[in-house]
Image (cartoon, rainbow, N blue to C red; front, side):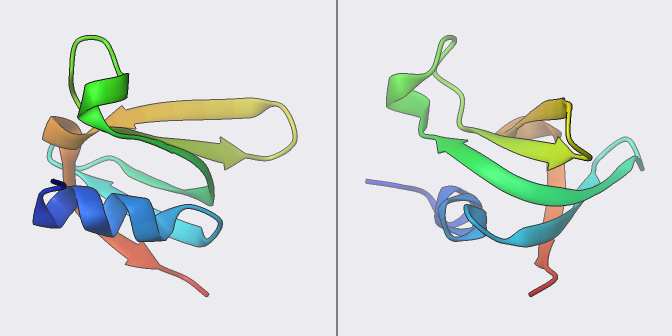
Length: 71
């Protein structure tokens, strides 16, 4: 069963998002992939955000303060 934050991460997949990290960093882009904790090593949920054409940034659940959907 997914946690509340994992559900938000899941629903971000396929959308343009703004991810606000706990360290204050803000990442905007297209959420291409959601990986649930059970399918990831070290068992932490993760989203992958595409910035531009070549850059894919992985952000794990503990790093995320908030996700805003932009579309």
